[in-house]
Length: 222
Figure 1 (tube, rainbow, N blue to C red):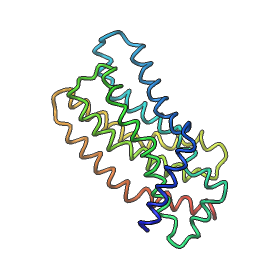
Figure 2 (cartoon, rainbow, N blue to C red):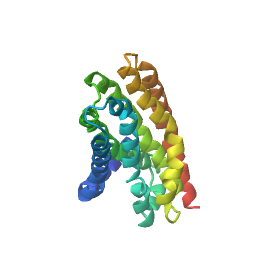
Figure 3 (cartoon, one colour):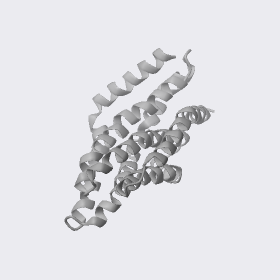
């Protein structure tokens, strides 16, 4: 199973290298969205820095949504996914790897470029550790929840329209706790509470959501 997982991760990264444009789009979109907020506000406006965590989190969420529709669709349409369900190791390692691969290619870059974007919005440097910790704990949940929603809609026409409707309500607590950690740090309070909650949700999501996504994909072949 570990070998199948590693091979699937390598395949996802290899495919991403062949289609670099698709995976460059989320960071570029993130950069544009946050920069527009910065340009739209007054220079050194304290209100802009107060809303910076929410802006960065919503930008990350919208950017991650750009690639979710294609997470399983290509393999579903060319028959690769069906063959995965027939292989000896079973579909779970491959589907888990696709979810982790999505975060490596989407959520991780978004988290890393958040620091300079936060400074652009006037965020104090002492808030950055809490903000980045929240993003590193929360963006995997964007991939896990989004992957589950993509698995539910993989066989539906125009699933890209339905995906945001499914994902946005489920991702609400992640955005609340993630931005709450940064706000707590900005107010001189401990960010530990929201971060512990994010970590607990991530642990739960890593255990349950890949199983749910596998079941949803299996159902699409029935």
